[in-house]
Length: 155
Image: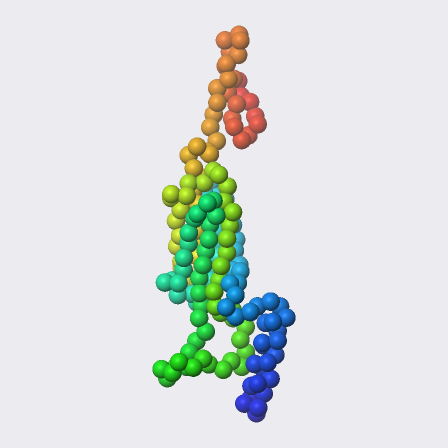
């Protein structure tokens, strides 16, 4: 009975993918969280089941690019034919994501790690972009220090 419905499942899956814009061979987005911790920014990408050898992280012209690939499985008996899916909900193919980066990042010290299906990219803040204390002279010989980034004054 399952074999009789196999073409129906395959056709419904293909139609659903076409309606929602998930075409095979087209780079797809990957879920991401991005946050700041202290003097670094962190971007985490969900890429379960990706072969680490297909991962590529590059920074060029203030753009961070992450690429990965999850190929469709092949028949297990050494044949080159693709398997016939009954249900195919896990995305396959090429994945790509680009992030525009600000001026204050140290792109020479970007770090990437792929553990448990999560790619973590760490982008440190450049030294010249970190907040600094600036002393301000006053005509009466008294000095004030203003903390950059806090807007507060101390005497």
